[in-house]
Amino acid sequence: MPEQMNTTKKLNQFLCRTALLTLTLITLSACQSTAPATSSATAQYLLLGEVHDNSAGHQARLEAIRQTLQQDKSMTMVLEQFDTDQQTALDEAQRVCSTADCLLQKLRKPGAQWQWPLYQPLIQLALDQKIPMIAGNLSREQARRVMKEGYGAVFDAATLQRWQLRDNGTNNSPTDQQPHQTVLQMQQQEVIQAHCGQLPLSMAEGMAKAQMARDIVMADKLLQQPSRSILIAGNGHVRKDIGVAYWLRFAGAKPAYSHVYAESAINAAAADAQTQISKQARPDPCAGLIINSKPKETP
Image 1 (cartoon, helix red, strand yellow):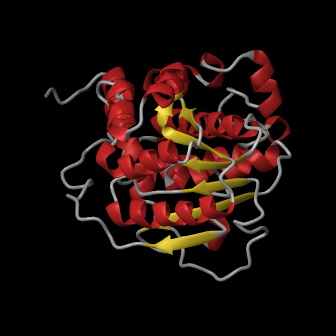
Image 2 (cartoon, rainbow, N blue to C red):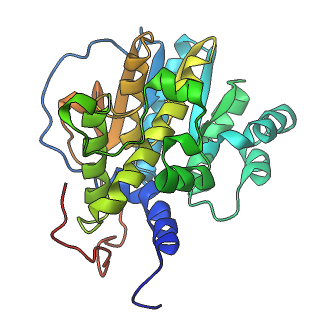
């Protein structure tokens, strides 16, 4: 591979890494004990996280969902794993399929990074219990456009206004700050950390905006549902401080309950509950990784 990769190729590679790295390498301060503002029994929105490749986390979350459905079967499930442009196909698959394998055969996208066997029990539960499944994610191409062009590449003017999104950068004057400046800066830090501290700040902003755009789309899908809803997404997406729960609060929505399934303790401010799971055996994603041509460039 040439030493100097062009920007587009870099973006494509980083985007593929982000789905796993952003959510498996988050290392925050030690867990603190605080009472959640709401409970899983009363929340309108249950935001249930994951480390994408961790089988123990998938199993623990599935059991929690089973228990929830024993109390309330009139729920909807919004999934990060399906892109919004797949909703028609997902609706049809739910109509004709009785097995998760059937549904996934119809919904798999070429090049997708998801480890589908880990999701089969969850999808089978939804099919068996007649829980509607809603596609909740931006497509990879849409995320790339946000990274390169900003929010306006995928959101219309009304949506930009509704969520108060601006594409005027992070170095504004104190009188022209973005409404979500703190979240953007925190997301940039997460993206850089997820890429082993090597990602140039010049690229981190675009990737952070793509992450925020995904969170907004998921929040919007939850808001559109007529019943209580469960969000299935990576731990970074369900966080209270910078993830979907943040955007639900911004929209003035009913209470959300965020539960992460993490391989190490996270800051209590990031979630209402956390289940610590055993670490999944995997190669070190930072081994041999060289990205940043400007190692001193930091936020």
